[in-house]
Length: 282
Image 1: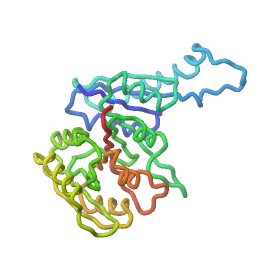
Image 2: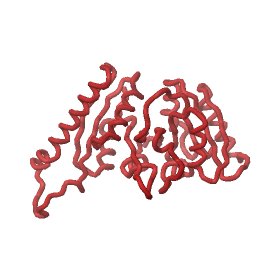
Image 3: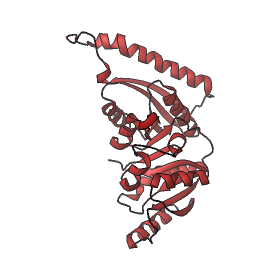
Image 4: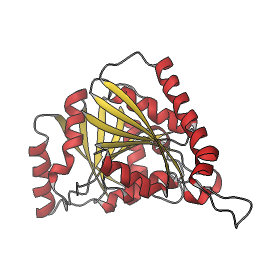
């Protein structure tokens, strides 16, 4: 039985992530925990001398939030057929957002966080919103980030960008391996360099380790040269049936460039392709 945490701010963006999660885990037994966090900095009263009692917080914040969570449960029941493998629970919390996520990950023994992401718009267009960025960088838990334009479909191909520098335990890749087996997906291991060069001895050893680890799956290695990693990812996604991009959080060389460029130009994968971010278990 998997335990899946679904943070929601009641937006259509977070609803899209919930829909994706239900479909993605359709054939697995899961406990889904719908969590809404009312952050401390949003609990503000006009009279600065006013002390927010538990009763006031319950009346002003918690009750409306619980009502919204029940509305989501009804929406799920309306749009999805009954799945006896799935159970849903609702959670509300008044806390700092990341502290709440960490607390529930530990208490509920969460296997995966599924969270919607919507980057800022306009001149300061970024790849992921601040809440999602905080979760995937500060919470030690496998996280599936679902962009606002992503729709669940056949998991044909999964891209795995790597610099062949395995500074992590290879067992961190287990969630990716499970997905490949479950959906019979093809893994596309992608190496991107700014200028063409041969792999060194350590990189070749890492490549061999990956080859051995994924030997029971359909996989292939691909090599691209581009000064900008995100542009190379965009070209690769456009040229293939990529349905997900998987990254290891500790692989900072690629991780930061693919997800956290402050400005995005001519890059659309961040609005359409889910990101699976893997963390080493603590």
